[in-house]
Length: 351
Image 1: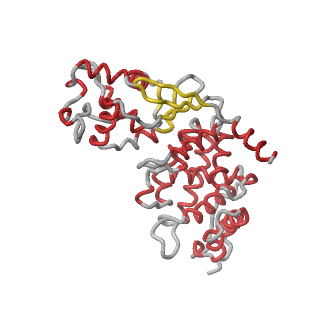
Image 2: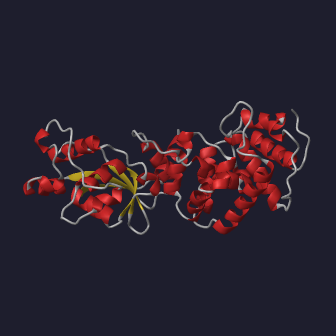
Image 3: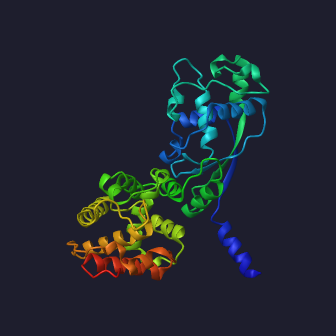
C-alpha cells in the first residue's frame, strides 16, 4: 500500500494545471497575436467541414457545453495547443470583426465561414459572422470556453502523455507527430528536413497513408537513437524515443546529423537499387531498414564506408529472422544491426 501511495505522489507532482474560462474574443485574439501556437503537425490536421464548424458555432451561440480545450504553457507565456485545434480554428475561421480582417487565412481558409446545416438556428444558415445582428455578435464574443492549461512546471513526458490520452478525436496524431509538438527544437527541425530528402525516400518506400504522418521522421529518429542511445533501450520503443528526444531536443547537432545521414543514404544507394524490400513486400519493412541504416551509420562512423555486400544479401535468413518476430526486444535489435554490418562488409548471405 505504501508503495502505491509513493508512486501516486511521485507521478502527481509532475502534473501542474490551471483551469480557466476564456472568452471567444480572447481566444481569437491570442491566435491572431501568435500567443496560441498551433504547430505545423496540427495545421495540416484542420479538416473539419463547414457543417461541423457551423454546429460548433451554433452550440456557442446557444450557450451549450463545449468540450474543454487543453493547452500547454510555454516558458515565454504562450500556449501550445494540445487538444482543441478544430474548435479554436473554427472560431478563427468564423470571426471577422472588421472589413479587412483576414484572420481566417491563418487557418488555411480562403474566406470566412458561412454557416450551414443548422437545425435549431436554421435562419442563420447562409450567414457569416458579419451578417449577424450586432447584439448576437457581441454575446457570441463574450461566451467563455473552458481551457485547461498544463503548466510549464510539468515535464515533457507529462505533455506527451497528455497529448496521447487526449488524442482521441476523429483525426488522430501519430506518436511522432505528438513528439514533434512536445520536443520542438533543433532535433525536430532536423528530422523534418531529413524526411523531405528525395534519396532517402527512394530507399524507404512507405504506404500511401503513411507518407505525411511522421513515419519517416520517426525512422530517422530511430537511426540516431539506436546508434547513440541504444544502451537505454528496454523494448519500449515509444518511451525510449521520448527519452532520447528529451536528451537532445535543444542541443542536437543538426549539421553533424545531416552529414552522417547523407553519407548513409549515399553509401546505401550505391549497393541497393530502389527501395529496401523483401520478397512478397511492396513497401519497406521498417524493422529491416532500421537495422541496415543503424549498421551503416556505425560502420561509417568507424571509417568503414566502402560497402561491398554479396548478391541477395537482403534475403539473408539471419537478417530476416532478427527483423520479423520479436523485433522490439534488445537482442533482436542488436541482432539485425550486427548482421547488417557483417553483410555490408561482404559476409556471405544465408539464403
